Amino acid sequence: MAEQPTSSPKPPRGGGPTSIRLSRPLVIVGGIIGALLLIALGFLFVRSLLPSPTEPGPGESPLETPPTSPLPPTPVAPPLVEVGESEVPLAVPTLLEVGGRSIPVRPSLPQAEDPWAVEAGQSDTAVWLYGTVVNYVLGLPPTDENRETVRGIQKGDPLVLRLSDGSRITFRALLPDEVPVGSEEVFEQTQPRLTLILLDPTAWTVLRADFEAVVEPTPATGERMAEVGQTVQVGDARVVVLEGHAERGGAGLAPGTMLYFVEVLVRNTGDAALTPSTFLMVLEDGKGNRYTPSPSAAGAGKHGPLPESIGPGREVKGSVAYVVPEDLAGPNLIWTFSPTPASEVRTRFSIPYAPPANPAPLPEVTILEAFLGENGTILHVVAEIHNPGDEILTVTADDIALSSSAGPGRLQTPSPPFPWVIAGGKTRQVELQFDRPEASTAVVTILGYTFEISGMP
Image (cartoon, rainbow, N blue to C red):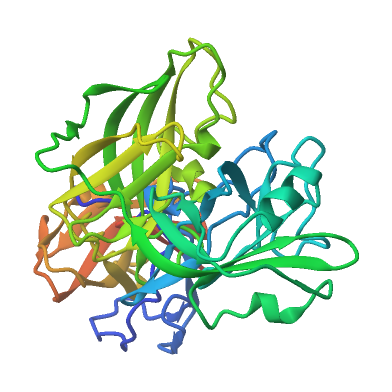
């Protein structure tokens, strides 16, 4: 039995009706082909209906917004960068090391009324101006400790910015200076550097630091990576990669991209809660390209997003989603995990990768003609079936049905006899003969496509 379509059919191919012997000529209105066939003495109408309801494919599930976190809010998705013809998420700052301090970094909300706002109790947090990735612009609340830190920096002192993919970027400080509040020059994205702003309400103290070097996380020589299904203890997290899988056709994806999911199990073996939104979870393909998670896409995975918090002793499953190019390079992917991005304690999993198969194109069905013959006792349906795929399409009696208010219709004679074998790229014209239903309207189903035939006297 041929597979049933899982989505609405494509518009059928055009084509005029084929002449056959008419025992009782009628006029046929083919809604599916948009043509009128005038033959005489009565009317029979044919129109297409929606295919039978089916479950959405894995790539058709709507993407869900992750649950609200008690931590400071983050953007729905990280900034995107073009990789080939695809757009993939960029790593974002997570920690700033300056003046002997390690200061957590959170992104501002895009289009927020006050992008520098921090919540109560977050005065020791720097705010990264969302989207600034050539010149990283960070703001510090004007606390006494922050003033002392900025003003104590000497020319040439290092500032280190850690990113969500585990990279560490080193900058060298220039001397701080003051600019008017809101000065646009500090936001320029023309030179690789870090700009740290002490957000005093009267005048901004700006510390600029020029780019020096970047160190990306790479496996140590001879490092043995964990495999799928292997349990690994990383700090206070015990983690297992259950599987990795790619899904094409996710809602809202840019052309040339798809979703890749790492399905994980995490157990908190420590005494304090773990916060998955702060986990380091980086995916690396066979060419060394790195991808950071896309939280808004996690709902389309098998287990959904990880929870906001994992309490001591609690074990959870979750999906970590990535927007990747459709031509993602294998044959193995590397997934790097750490419960604390700023820590060097992390583990790497090797995940075998094979590109997902392209879905087979749906067959195309066109009703060419429908008429009553044999003194009105037999309903003839003439159809054309096109196989746009490369594989052979086989049609059997199980793929054909007729129904009406009088009940199921009986198929008498198919022409040619079943099975209908249609090679890839080929089209076949067929005829079905049913006992005339005791109703003025009937529905014929062919390969999941349904057509209403009306006007039978």
